[in-house]
Image 1 (spheres, rainbow, N blue to C red):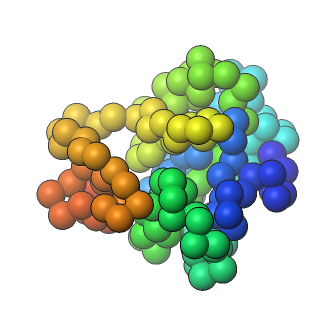
Image 2 (image 1 turned 90 degrees about the vertical axis):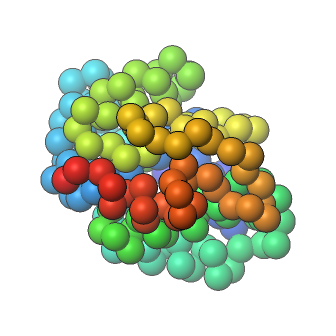
Image 3 (image 1 turned 45 degrees about the vertical axis):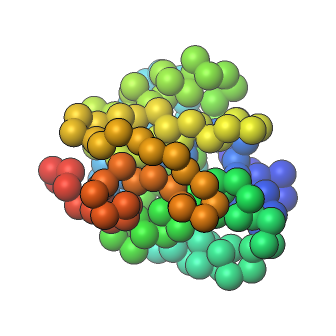
Length: 164
């Protein structure tokens, strides 16, 4: 996966055609890398991003983003990902050439502790992992933010309620 201007929307990371997966730690992300290799995904198709690297990237991007970044959900996702990075979450960014491949990727990593797996399409960013006990999703908007599906509405609460 390359990191270039094509993977950004108004200054915020938007890797169209990729699944962005969060894990509660580096060990889980490494296990997922091995599992993905087992289904033929490795090398340039996948990139591991540490909590520290994600936090730095997101803080810089959010500070420099265009006001137009708030029109869609990219800014809300960036803020939710920053909250997870501050909690020590790691990411895998995985190339998915189709919806079917995106679901296969999510199915492969969910048993390994993946918290979120979001497939970035051209117009829609789709959450691929639902957890038992998640609240019903409500409308999301730039003003209301991303629905973390928690009582508080904060991503950190969702992450902290998962067993380690």
